[in-house]
Length: 263
Image (tube, rainbow, N blue to C red; front, side, top):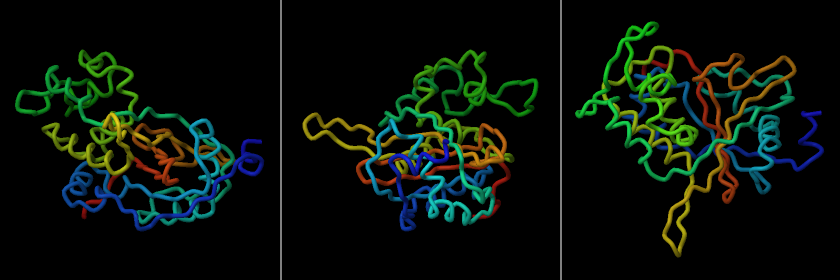
């Protein structure tokens, strides 16, 4: 049985780290952007310590233990916004998707500045669309494979957590007010990424590399899909970001809808 894995194999126990508040949740400029993008109160993260060594090959087991842990369940029920579906029934299965995370700079976004998505000023080029009356080439490049700019960023790079984060911010929440320029998206992406990801420097080569493991996760109870939402939605997501050396894990999540209107 899937739900018995924690008992029969290596188990993990988790303890909240309430003192770890990332800078993006304290910076008023970033919070103002999240409010504008209809993500304020719906995009957040929580951090925990855990008690045994983590290895990527046991990511599914790790996630299952995470969502069955009483401390985690209790803290997810107490999310301030009150938007999250409580895990009031035991989680019986989890979905895990390893997410590549190797980027230590913002260079992957350089092609966007010279391919026609942006004007030389950095303003996003507007375009006509059959469904969306107010559309632009940036969102088209992010969402539509038949866009002439879709492959400006390669398929492998699109799978990176850094690119996924950028895309999530660009698409926003239900009442998102989209930016006229790309720079606010880039700034917010850089700040959140630096908050979430751990890196190390090789003492000999001086090369910086990412040590975090990123896993996109979902959890089901006996009634079906439960976390991060009961229905599939591109902008409802949850990622576990694991620092294997510190034995810390952060759950970074967003529930699509109408964000708060006040800071």
